[in-house]
Length: 451
Image 1 (cartoon, rainbow, N blue to C red):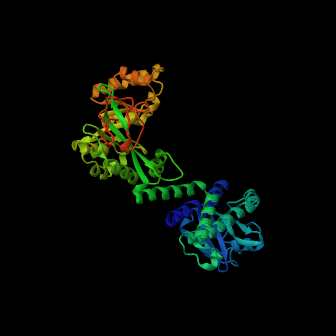
Image 2: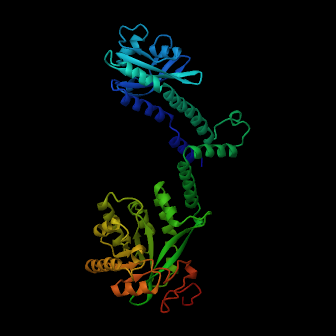
């Protein structure tokens, strides 16, 4: 977990961004300002660490505590203003010339009784700021101090958290805590700052554990029936995860896609599914789910052997940015005998775009379109139009999510070619497939008896 947690800390805690927002908002608030910078004080003087505007190239510049208006603001605890840095004896004239500052307002920043730095509001012309600007910044001084002080505190905490997550914090700093306790403390702090980030870390750990140990992923198969012959024509391979607590497979794949692990997880599931193909009866094809990124990786094609019995069901976790490249990759797979099915048709615009661009062999009706099709004329009309479209393009329709006989009869009457769903057969391990609604099925279980 160390590297993931370290990355999470970097994403969750960004002190410089917090200070950057202070300078960004201040330059918007004070119309005359050309630049705003935050300087942090130490024994050597004041170092400007964050800024907005025309002085960004001068970040890292130091000025003295005793020879600058910034230093005077810190010592006096008051907002200080210089209308002309060429004539005001309180300013560091050479530093102002280097920075291109002709007029200046400095807001002291304090944490309790301690001075931590200054907010310097600059303009490249003299007499840029008025009493209203000074009054506004004076009123905001306490708030700005709290924000910048919080950023400094977060920077210290971040440094400690990074060392804890990397296992580099020494025993004195751990205060007698063991590594496990230190990690628990780190996780606690990250969870308080951003629970979503910690959830992503945990999701990544779970997904990588499955990729590293393929036995944690199993495959079940759901039959797809030919509605003309009432026989099983194919089975769809569906991944299941042997990890507690239970999470639905779609959550696993969605998380993996979001974390950049989608292709690895899909390839693992595909490899598992293909390993069972020789245990399916002759004439029964294998449908495998994968997204465009897995297709474009080139690695999926190598797994899908023998190709002539495989249907690739194209799912989508991300938008397709390059259809010509995807079409080319699919064409290569088709030349090897692999057929293509488009998933979730009727569920949204993207699936229809896939159909128009990719010319699939199969069009799969989404279960939301199938559910209640026997009583809903709108669903029937849409399904009928897709059947007509498929006939005109040489594709065939597969209806998924068939839950009862009335839906099945309606689909058959509409001319739908294939169907799957709980009414026809539940997903099951290869040795326990049962087709109770298809007595003429040719699919057999491993003991050789008819299912």
